[in-house]
Image 1 (tube, rainbow, N blue to C red):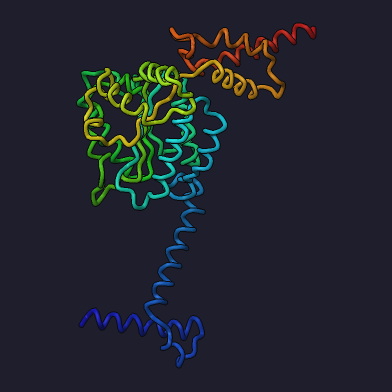
Image 2 (cartoon, helix red, strand yellow):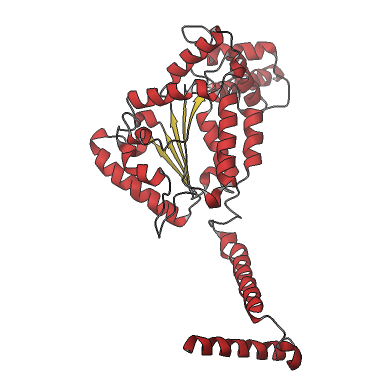
Amino acid sequence: MRLAACSHRSSSVLLWLLVIVFGVQPGLASWFNISAVLDTVSNAAKSSLKFAKNNGYCALTECCNEVHVRFDIQELRTALESSLYGQHIARQVIVNAIGGHLGNIEQSEKPLVMSLHGLPGTGKNFVAEHITRALYKRGAASNFVHKFLGRIHFPLESEVKKYKVALVEHIKVAVAKCPNALFIFDEVEKMPPGLFDSIVALLDNHAYTKALDFRKAIFIFLSNVAGPEIAVRLKSLVDSGIWRDETKLHQFESTLEIASYNLVGGLYKSELIESHVVDHFVPFLPLELRHVEQCIRTEYRKFTDQKMSDQMLSDIVKEAITFDDTGLYSNTGCKRVSKKVEAYYYGELRKQQKQEL
């Protein structure tokens, strides 16, 4: 009875508001659908509050809203297509995985979990950097990006129990602030075994509580582990007559999973792998000379619009690249390229200045 009386009084008040505030004729006011009007007023109020927040407080600081959390998958696709060399598998898998996760994020059943593997300089950190730029207005500087480095954040194997507790707490706090958080673990091979066992429950299906929902988050693990195994597998496939650019994810994924589980590092004998919460094991293939040359040309264009001569390219290649035992794949990929090009360009400028004197 009380509820009915309250509802009647609310309707009466709204009818009088229609008459007094909006100038509706008393005889016509009763024709209004009161429930629909209430919904309209409520939605308008919510929109006004959202607009005020986005253009007030959130214009001055970072908020977990569409202004600062962008979900620009096209930007990611463009960046990887134009500047990630020799990684056709990684490019396709990562763009599709993130695009699918974001496109279905309101119905997501679990966080997106990817484990990126390959030799140094093959592009793992490059990809992680561009993911932050595509997802957040502030890129890697966003408060919603949480990056952990093995040798800095988890240096002592003897402290792994303490690290496990701290890591779970950090993730909980981060997700409470923004469910669309991104977690990047770099140098996984330098992290103590067992570290990630404590977060398996957070990465599994239906990972949410009344207070926290982890299903919208993204977790990325970067590791040099399995780099040599990827190179061996690739060479075997190429020797069998398969072109490098025709190789597929399924030809590497089991190799990565087995190597990660059995080689020393943060994933060694990890429940993360045993529980199958990693959605994608992504191989970064070893780079050939042609790929490193592309990196060199790209870096050189950052300094000048002038075309790089073949001699310049050859000189930098000699300093920047060493090859593995096969003589086919670079040991360091593009890792040392930026500083080699930087030094070479500075040296060329010095030569020009001396000649002009």
